[in-house]
Image 1: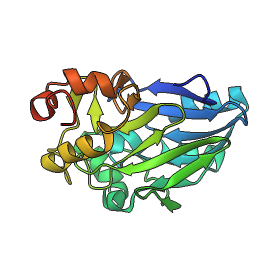
Image 2 (image 1 turned 180 degrees about the horizontal axis):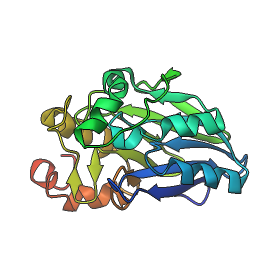
Image 3 (image 1 turned 90 degrees about the horizontal axis):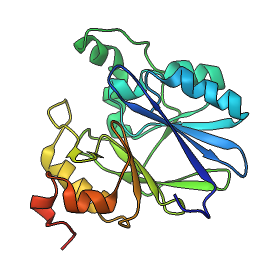
Image 4 (image 1 turned 180 degrees about the vertical axis):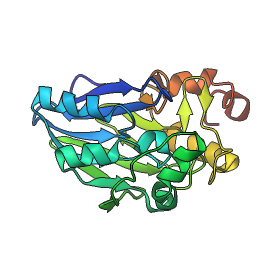
Length: 222
């Protein structure tokens, strides 16, 4: 993140699926948004209380169950609206069925309050996130980009040294690779990527070292 940006990012990682939930806080106004509150939603809510921050929105990069299972509990505790791309609404509505596939149960999440659409700007305090539609891992997957902070929440589109799986319902490998090329690798090289699983990385690192991308793009965008 850049020194000039008031955005602070906190990470909460589940011991189950190892998914990352994020709390993005505008330090100058003490308002925040939550990104993908999975099983660690209670810890995220506790952090909000400790910070004395107001949660303005729950933003979902996509609707696979490991990233949405904590939405209901968090929304009730802090009364924050839920944002989701409409193309992932069918997955969202089948959260219980998704969980059953993995042998466990989840509470049905509340209906989304607002849509996330490509090009939309989500403002909280003095911070702003740009919505970029990145289908492939799921039809309605989005990433959330802060140009001021030099950071992007990329969900399960790309990871350090890997990319999202496409063998789940709604997955499309070719669309995923196109999304990564057009919406992720086109960002400045120094942009920090905060993925849905694993450690943070940068656009520049993935351009030159990701084995799924270098053979296709030659370490760049040419």
